[in-house]
Structures are given as C-alpha cells and as structure tokens.
Length: 255
Length: 255
DNA sequence: AGCAGTTCGTACGGTACCGCACTTAACGGG
DNA sequence: CCCGTTAAGTGCGGTACCGTACGAACTGCT
Image (cartoon, rainbow over all chains, first blue to last red; front, side):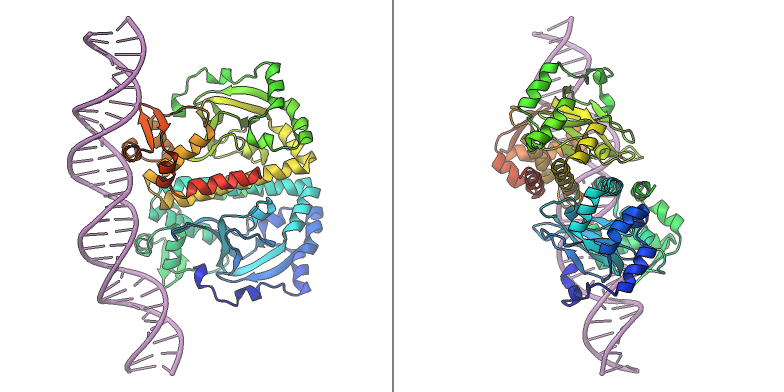
C-alpha cells in the first residue's frame, strides 16, 4: 500500500540519459504514443524523458496537481479513491494503452484519486503544460487524447456497474487478466493478496478464497505474492464480461 | 424502465418555436452554458434549440451515436450500463450542471451506456459536429468542456468506490440528494421505488427498507412514486460523503 | 539448523443483501 | 362507491460477503 512506500523513491523518479530519449523516439512502446502521426510525435518527442517508476511511487497524491504526464511502457499505474473513513478502492488502472495524468491534461483543479505505481517498469513522461500546448496546436493529437479520455470513462462506467453486479471471484479474474495484458512479456505478476484485496475493496480472506477457486480450476497459480497465469481461456471464462468490454474500448482508441 | 417507454416519445423530441431560441439566448438555465463567455456563447447560440425531454425518452441507445448534445435546464438525464445477462445499473446522472453526449463530443465510436431521460423537463440541444467545431475554434470553450469532462470522470470514479464501500441506504440518500439539487424548483421527485431500485442495482424490497429508514428519520416522505425531501440536513447525514464530493467537483467546473 | 518475519489458509459468528412470493394500501376509472 | 390496477410493505430462507482471529506454511537471515 502507498502508506508503506519507502521514503527514497521520489528521488529515483529522475530522467535517464539523453540516449534514452533517442531510443524512445525510435520505438515508443506506449501504444498511445505509437498511434501518433510522425509529425505529431516529432512535436512532443523532445519533451519526453524516460523514467523508471518503482512500486508505490506516487505520481500524484489526492488533491495534488500533476507536474508530468506519464505514458507507461512496462509500468502499470493505479488510481485509488480513498474515503474519509480510510476505506479505499482502485477505480482505474493505466498501462501502455494510455497515460496517467488525465486530470491534469483536462486542467482540473485537482483529482480525488491517488495515482501510484502498481507494477514497476518504464514510462515516458513530459510536463503537463507541454501536452496541453501540443494538443491545442494539433487537432489529430487532440482527437486521439479525446478518444482515449472516452475509453477511460468507459472503463470507469463499467467499473461502477461491475462492482454492484459481479462477485469477488469474477472481479478478481478481471483484475488479473487486465494486468496480465499489460505485463505480457513478464513471466509473473508480483502482488500480495493483501494488496489485491485492497485494490478490489474486499477482505484479504475473500481474495484467498476467490484466488483459490481460480487455482483449483487451473486458471492461475498464486503463491506468496507471485501470480502466474496458467490458462487464459479458463481465466476469461471465470471473469465477468467487463474485462472484454473495457479491453475493446481501448483497442478502439488505437483503431 | 426504458423498456416501458411509450412508442411515440421520439416524435416529441422536436424543436420548439424560434421564440424559444431567443429566450434561451437571453437566459440559459444550463449552468455550463451560463459559464461561457458572451462571445463563446454567441458562437454556439444560433445552433441551440429548446426541446422538451420526456420520461424515458432515449437520447442514445447503447452502441448508437448521438446526433445531438443536450444541455438540460430542468430535465435530468441518466446513463445506464446494461450487462449481457440483463442486469443494469445507473453509472451517472446529468442535470443542469452539464451535458449529455460526452461520448459523441469526444468522438468515440460508441458508448456502452444507454442515455435516457430520468425526469421530464427542458433542455437545449445542438448538433454534435457544431460543438466539436466550436471547441476547436475556441480555447476557453474547450477548457470549460475539458474541466466538465474531468468532473464527470470524478463522478464515475467516486461511484466505483461508493458501490463497493457504501450500503443501500447511504446510496439511496445520495441519489435523492443529487436529484433534488437538479429539480430544486419542483416540489417533489416523481419516481417509483421499482425504478430507483433499478438505478441502484438492488431489489425493490431493499429500496422499500432503505427509504423506510430515511422516512422514519424524518429525512423524506415517499408515497406512491412521489419523493418529498423533508429535511435535507438529515438526508445529508444519512448519505455517504460521495454526494458532497461529486457536487463540489461540479461546482469547481463553474468556478 | 534454527528462528523471526511474512504470507497465506481457515474458522466462526454476524450482517446485508438476495430471490421469490404474498399481502396490504392507495389511486383512479366506471 | 366499488373494483381493478398499481405501488409499497412484509416474510422467509438462502448466500456472499464481513470482521476478527489464529494457526500453518513458506522465506530469509544468522
């Protein structure tokens, strides 16, 4: 949980060498950046810097403004809403299909959600103002960001309904599938049941039971914070339809 | 429920007389339109027409494109996500603080949500393309729409967490408060328990119990589809914090 | 190898819902 | 004024969670 984050992490959120910029410009592994036209990408490429984002790094606290927009390539970012009584639930996740800092791009005063790193990895980032300016200058870029915004809205809307209508096991399967898509190259997802329970807004014991059922069915293996997806087909049939609905919305953004 | 809508309603969604346009231009009662600068409003005013939206009028079916953007003044619009198995939940509501057709404005292929009229009233509408064009031409308008988009996102995010963390009575109180804000001039909210249950994604019997508790506490009176707010303070204390959080986000949009 | 710390499995009673079905109460048309 | 219809209340058993707690299993350190 973000509460447990080590004190030193923010210091690591600094840019790498200029060589990274070149590599990034050559082959952006963020799908949204990759969908840009050559000229649009050329406009923002000079502003991009590659950073390594580590588990529990906080990109923006609740009510705090973003300084940068983050386009993850291998990192996975979570947005969590926390209530006055301490209860908290993950409301959205962001991987290489999008970017973190939507509230800042939209020039909102502040976001209610806390944004932090769920799974360590690389991201490209740029100052908020630079993206706003680029969007003002480039209609095609603006259109892509708008379509992404809608996909994120669709993710949230689906989540509202899903949390009412679907049980813990289905939501658990959905979460694992979504995350698996975003760390496809990795052999496993590193995540304690405690943390997953926090994301889903349920007890850890409920995750133990749900994950146990998924394991019995041969969908996954889950041992001491290491989730391995064994049979995606089984996992998908254990999940609610929300997984596919949301994935399709994001695929639509990139055509 | 939209299923029960009368066959003739779409025919009623036609513009009123030109005189209505003038009245609208003089005093737009939609808060978003009212927040526009004179010159920005002057740009889009010629495109606006006043329509009366009636209960269960469908503004856009799931997967169907909007033809118009609707800025409600006294009407209240609901967005509902329906699942493959027929289950459905309201994911968002729109009143005079915003507009229906966000998906279309963002140029999404289609929205998963079904958009229909919850409470009869007036709205101003304009063709989707006209708003997109106006936003492209006017940075201040674009900024206002962006900030509204974020407030809508905040509403959805809060809903995701709320549906996990808060009970039926709290959510019931929240719903009534939100709707009450939007029909403030009206003496009562017309809504059967059956319908409210559908919106909240619970059984009608659960609404009977929750509403009964709110009644016992003196917050409301609820009799045969007529909700009267008796004591807002009590109602607010019966609701979860989500009511205030969302309201504040929308107030921020308009300054 | 032994020990401490972490992660997971399990158990127990409690509660807030659910689905279903039936009764009661209000309203409105003839 | 009666009566059909519609809306709200109620009752029952079932279930999916909850909060709490404790013990088991694995891991890393010395």
